[in-house]
Image 1 (spheres, helix red, strand yellow):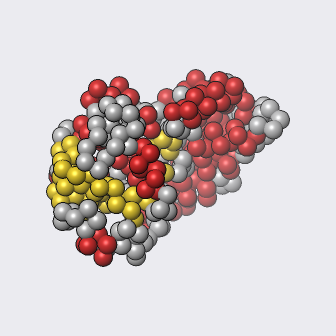
Image 2 (cartoon, rainbow, N blue to C red):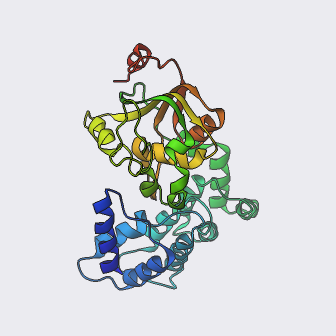
Image 3 (cartoon, rainbow, N blue to C red):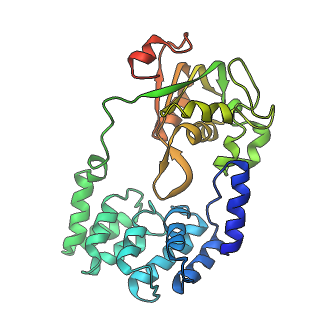
Length: 312
């Protein structure tokens, strides 16, 4: 498994993109290695477990959650994954297959404090909320602590504050940018693979934008050259986001101009998008992805308004 994965990493590096997340079969193989890790591979295996498996209800997440749950109950052991570490990792999986195990640990005095912290920052509980509520009403102090944390919105209040000033470099795209420019329909087959699909963004050259491979690969070299200024990029356009492929278009923009999401492989959030006009649904999708869309006059390539707002 490790040999095949490293070969895949090398192949993707030749394309200039990160490897794909582990699938369910690879995760199952990883689990077996974690039970009896080859000497010298311990740190690499832990990194794969923590950072290269999708959270939520992905099939690989099901395998990961099952392994971690078994660690917490003692049904499975690993010399490099303790029950405490397993609970912490369950708390990074956002919701889905991890929830039942975390709720169960509220009855385990040794692991309950860690489960409280994990659940307090988990919102995708669905009907499992009532399981926590039932424990709280029955007198479980740890469940009561979780309920109180949700009521106090600690998951929100403990997030990092927005910076007072953000200095960015403008990536200006003149004219109208529709979602097919950002997520071309002929490349729809690659949309689930965000780093690969993002290579097709703006693959048709226009004024100020030079595709690396006309009709094939977008202005990656141009984007990387702008990043050498040392600042994050802001996507700036006259009209941005018209069209229907708004989610995959957002993913492409944020892959180059967003921030990595801890414990979530191959997806990014945050970023800034400025347009003289931003299509309303695209505007909302950017917001939902943690980005900051701003409508303002961008008639100058580097508008004075941008400079005064801290943009390079």
